[in-house]
Image (tube, rainbow, N blue to C red; front, side):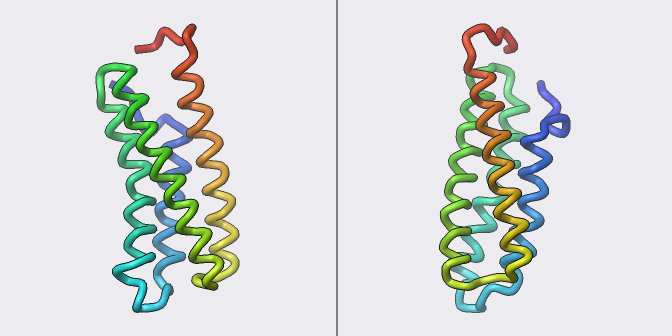
Length: 123
């Protein structure tokens, strides 16, 4: 088993969850079962899938869960974009979330790429 807490991708994803919860806290009440809920679910899915992947024995399963995490991250990125275009959330929090989203995406994509390299024998 791998220790998820040692992964930079997990650390960033975890920080992103907190930022998304703070951002969505003040979304309009009519969005509580819409965009607020969707963004929170997508956000929490990213570090959750990293943790689940780390608990798997095989490299193939590990990468599978990292792929799911990456998909959730991309979903969140789109939802975040919609929220910003609708003017939801404070500008400062929007900027912090955008930066964290971009960094998390780069780090997670890099981790997945490195694990897919043929010469990476880590199982």
